[in-house]
Length: 128
Image 1 (cartoon, rainbow, N blue to C red):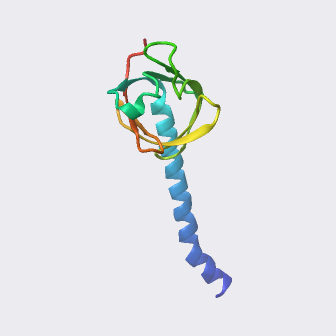
Image 2: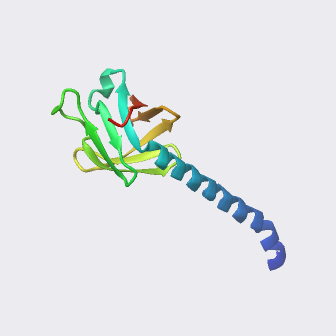
Image 3: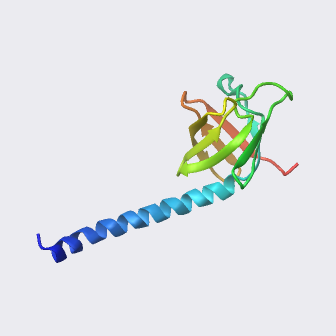
């Protein structure tokens, strides 16, 4: 195939991939900004007992988990966080491992799903 014809055939694929990556990056940046704030756990399914009652997620990539009652163990005690792809979140956990989770986010609800399928639902709280 002549080089000119080959570049005409491949160019749309390269451009489409670039557009997809740009869109994905914009979605991730938007999710990153929207995650910052204070979140309170809603409900208490048995599988969610290891996760904090309150999460404070800071824009700079740090988070802090608080238990209720204070002083009990939580898997998400504090550490780093980042959106690694649309709908995927990486958190450093109590043993310093970095674990990936699926998540969904809307105006006031943040749902994290662990590898076992446990859904932990958080609701946006005031900045107390």
